[in-house]
Image (cartoon, rainbow, N blue to C red; front, side, top):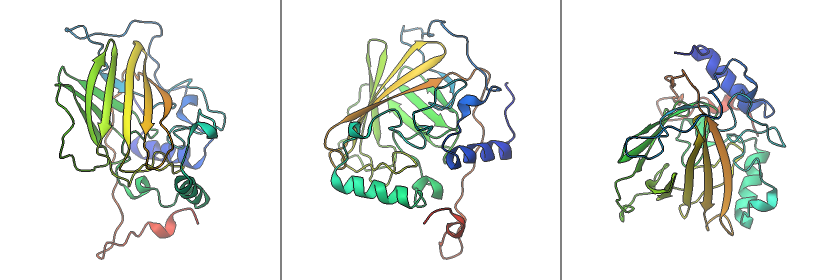
Length: 267
C-alpha cells in the first residue's frame, strides 16, 4: 500500500487547501499517478468498471489549476465564467453574503454532510457491482453515496436528504446518475453556491482510460438558478492508495452550543 501522510499531517494539509485558495494537491509530487493511455477495465458483463480509489477532482498530481487558483472544493464553478452560473437574485445575494463572511457558516465546517454533488480535497473510493454503485468519501464525515442500478424508479415517497435519492442507468459506456430528493441545507462548495430542495442533478460518469474518471454534472435547480448549468470534473486514479479513517465531530457543550464557533475565521 502506498504510504501517505500521517493522519494529523493529512488534516493539516487539507486545511491548508481551504485556507490558501491557490494551493492544491496537484502540486504534490509524492502522490501516485496511474499509467497513462491504458484502456479502462471492464467487468465480466462488459460494462466499464469504475472501481478504485481516486484523488479528488482537481487535487491529483499534475491536475491543472483554475484561473483563480481555486479547487472544486472551494468553487464548483471554478472553470466557468460568472454568466455560466445563472443565479436567481436571492441566490446571488446569499452567495455574496457567504463570501463576505468568509464562509464561516459552511455546514461542512460543522461536520455536516457535504451532499450531492460537492467534493472536498480528500480521496474517495468507488465500489461497483451489477446492481449498485457506491462512493465512499474519506473526508467530510466519512460519508457514502448509494446509486441503485437495479432498474428501480425514484422513491415516490422520497424524504429530502443531504445526498438525495440516486438511481443510475447505462448509456453506452457512460453511467448516468439521476438524483432528486435533496434538502436545501447543502452548499455546493465552500464559497457558498446554494442548493434548494428543488434541485435535480444528472452526473455522467465516463472512464476514457484506466487513469481517470470524468464526471459531467448538470445542476437543474429552479429554486436557485434560472436554467440548468454544467460542470466537468476529472478524478485521477490513485494506484496503491486506500482511503483512511477521518473523524469529524462537533465540539459541543451540554446545551448543544458549538464551542468551535468562537475560533472560526470569518465575520
